Every structure is written in structure tokens, then in C-alpha cells.
Length: 476
Image (cartoon, rainbow, N blue to C red; front, side, top):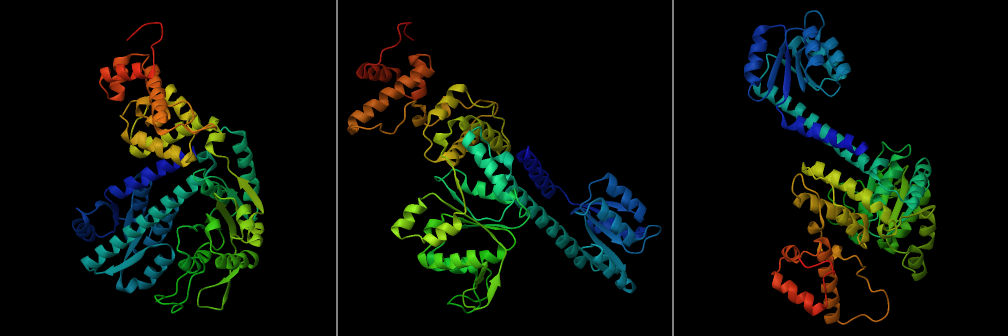
């Protein structure tokens, strides 16, 4: 439900940006209204009102993006109308028109929430520029709100789909940890959703409306990491032409998430430990301590205890981070989640691609359930996205859409003992593949040959060479 709401909000904002901006012109002088109508029509969709009461009536009944309103109006004056408009819809931009002797009223309008004011007689270019800036600010606000919705939607409980008892335990732990400020260490293979869990922890606590700053420790060069985290002062090093704020300052009051924390150089581990303990740091090139209120969450797909034993990761930093450990199971250990995840990702990407996909066949779903998923949930979502993008409107995803390797029911991994040579491995693969396709086509060899994109005589020869015989019930 949460995902559907955020997708609806996204579509509404996109439509509002694409459609023609609706400007309500409010002035008691017909000549001014006519002049503004000529000036704005073509670029904007113009609506007119001659007084404040009429303007409020239009705002209640029609979607208005921007109001251009005189300060001095009969009946309900401009300032009172401005306050009422802000009460009806605070997202409407308002630009006030005022005479040169009404500057004090114009300043009061700014304090009440107007974007700007333009004095009469106005310069056409100045007025158009003011309206353009107001609209641009509204669009930026919409984009920020959309990005915030996207981030909150990703960490919403409804986005974490699972039937697994182990994941249910993790969901309970997320709720408990979210209300605290304890450091959390999330471990698990690549693609298991570690950042999603980190965002869910943030969303479950009092910091939900505060910044969430993610740092990919493996993606930033070691020589730049200190500046990236703590910022630097002008002249701190070659190329430092101005002061730069670091991730710690941006995260103040919220959460900072260290992904792949095991890749941090040893020197930075010392500085990070102090920041965790004291909640203070210094910018590069400064000796002034800056105090922050930050919740720390770290994640890794490696064994940090082994790294501590090997001397590549500080034990004191490990214990400081590992206050609340959360270990995410790989997808192959919770196969009951494959079906709901497939359903969720089909619905998600069908909406994003504006396609109608009628689900997935039982045989294709069974093949996905039998797959090993070395890339975990990320691999599954990427596959479903590709299948949706390439799929046909109004059709199901079937076995014929899946990569060849996923049609094999048996694990592709060696089960122990000796590994066959290349020629034998190819023979085994061919035999498994052909039998699987024949099963899918109910042993109709012509259809199977079409599916494999080979001549049927080639298929007959392969079957004979590999010792594949059709069931007793008959030939195709």
C-alpha cells in the first residue's frame, strides 16, 4: 500500500510538471487584468478574478499553481486573501502586485508567505522573470518531496516483502532498534538488502524525518575519504579552493550509514572510532571540534571478526559498531520468499514501465524457486525488471522468457567429489537442458526445436546421441 501511494504521488507530480501552469490573476482594475492576460496567455493558462472573495472561490474549485494578486482589493484585501489561500493550499505560489506607496504592505505579504512582490507600473520582463522563478522553486520543492517519498518508500515496512520466519524476526528487531540510538552492524551477502534494512531502522524511530546519509566506503578513494566524511577548510590541501562540508555535518540529527565498512583504511578507522565515541570531529585543515548528534549504522558482506583476527580491522571499532548485530540470510535460505518477491517486483516494474504484465506461469515460478540466486534479491529484481521491460503487454512471463541456466532444476554447483572434464560437463548440461525443454513442451519435439531455435533433425540427432528417449505414451 505504501509503495502504491508513493507511486501515485510520483505520477501526480510528474503530470503537474508536464501540464501548463495555471496562473490566477486577481486585480480589481479590468485594464490591469486584460494587460496581464495578454502578457501571460500562451505561456500560462490564465484565470481571472476581480476581488479576494472571487479568488478564494476559484482556488477552492480549481487547481491553481500560481496566484498573481494585487495588495489593495475591495472587500477581502490582498493580505487577507493571501492568508486564506495559504490555508487552502500552502503549495500555491503567490506573487503580490503593489503600488510604490504600498511597499510596507508588500513586505508584510512576504512575511505571510508570498514568494515575491512586483511594483506597479511593472516591467514586463521583470514580472515574467519573477513568475518563472516562483514556478521553478515550486518544481524544485516537488522534486525534493518526490525524492524524500522515494527514500521513505524504500525503507517502508511494506517494501520489505517476506514470508520467512527468519525475516519476521529481523522485522521485529528493526522495530525495537529503531526507537533507540544504538549503533547497528548489518551483515549479509551482497544483494540481501542491507541498505534497505538501514533505512527501515531510520524510518522506525524518531529520526525518520532527519537526514539519512549513505557512504559507500569501497567507492571513495582512500586519499579522499577523510575529506568526504569530515569535510575540509579552504587551503587544507592542493585543490581545496573553498570550505567543504562532510557527510558527518550533513547527517547531523539523523543517521549515517557506512556500507562496506570493512574497506576503510586503518588510519581512517582510528578517526571514525573517535567520532563514534565522542560524537565530535574536525574538518581537514582545522583544529576546531564540531559536535554532532548522529546514529551510526554499518554494513559489510565480509567476516569482520576474521578481519579483526587478520589485523586489517580494529577490534575496538568492531565492538563499537557491533552493538546490535543484524545478520541477513541469503535468498537461497529463504526460498519461500521468491514467489512474493517475484509478484512484488512484477507489479512494481510494470507500473514504472507503464505495462500490463499478467503475472508469471507456475512453471517459470518453479524454475526461479529452484535457482541458487548468488546475487540474492538484487539479482532477482534485476531479472524481473528485464523480463518486464522485454515482455509483451497483456502476457504472462513464461519459461521461454527465462535465461537458459534457470531452466535447469538441479543446482549448477558441484555436489562434491570429482568435477567432470569440460566435454562431459557440456554433455551433461545439454542432456539436462533438452529434457527440461521437452518436459515444458509435453515432449512435442517440433515445438521443442522451435523453442531452442534449432532444426528438428538437429534435436533428433542430439536426443539419439545423448540417449534421450521419449515417454512410452508416444512420439510427437
